Image (cartoon, rainbow, N blue to C red):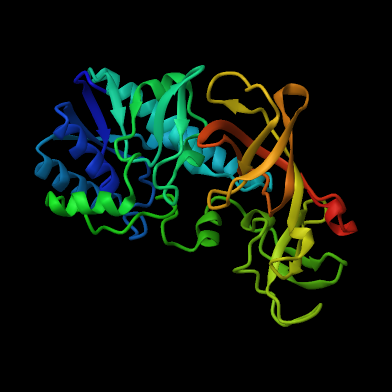
Amino acid sequence: MDRKHRIIVGLSGGVDSSVAAWLLKRAGHEVVGVFMKNWEDDDNDGYCTSRQDLVDAASVADVIGIELEAVNFAAEYRDRVFAHFLDEYRAGRTPNPDVLCNSEIKFKAFVDHARALGAERIATGHYARLAPGERGVALRKAADLGKDQTYFLHQLSQSQLDATTFPVGDLAKRDVRAIAREQGIPTYAKKDSTGICFIGERPFREFLARYLPKEPGAIETASGETVGRHQGLAYYTLGQRQGLGVGGTRGGGAEPWFVAGKDRTRNTLIVVQGHDDPRLYAEVVETGAMHWIAGTAPSGRRFAAKTRYRMADAHCSLEPLPEGRWRVRFDAPQWAPTPGQYLVLYDGETCLGGAVIESAHARELAPALAAAD
């Protein structure tokens, strides 16, 4: 960005967006900070940190010397993100609201608000990079691969990316903190936020029970033996280990239990023992309609993909299905691909897009898992 712009920075109260704003101000841009409040139903109970985050954002704006505006997007968040979040859990899937929050709030409602303020661009503290591509703007992985956030940004469109800049995408996290400390930015040592605000550090099942009724049922092994009771299929996700309440070493050894499937017809949770149980792995994943960042599918059918944020990219091939859906075949089995989560595709460092996982299959399934959805 050689030309100077009026840029609205999403100041979250964290160190990454703080340094993003400082870098833009140092480069000579006209910078205005906006703090987005996206949740307010129970933000007085100590779990949601939005009040302290606003105080921190105001302190950062004062040190940098920019204006700060607080904008309430709670209604948009509830309609566009949280309603979908609950619908997916009701259907027995495990959604990722952070992805939808980016595409619907941080890069849609926020972009609209920024343009109303006369801004040409927005900026956030995400770890990602943008570059000219053959078919528009390419979304590239961050220089600090350990902090790369392109997985959460893969649903963005060309128009959204064209209006955005990621100032910390070329920096390592340690360098971001070092800049903040050197410049006297008060968030330099602030702990990174984890999870989404409306859940925070609270027990997840307790939070979800406010909105979804408990529907207890049996916990069974893949061979059909009952080993416990669950509180409701919506409260569990594939690969989950904690909170199952299944004791003992039934079935062999002292290996921990993991959720391997959900039989919604019988309201039964299926578990296996051991992280490496083959029934936790799948080689074939089918998705819903794919969002391609470039607007259309790339040529070729050999790429890499990940089915969870922290997983390494895995080689795969693509096969188109009716209605824009895709079948993705991995070269090696993947651990617990989960319906409702996202499969995100890459070509080297370029994020191509992604889609919601509808189903995942191994080449051979135990009878109990074959009946589960």
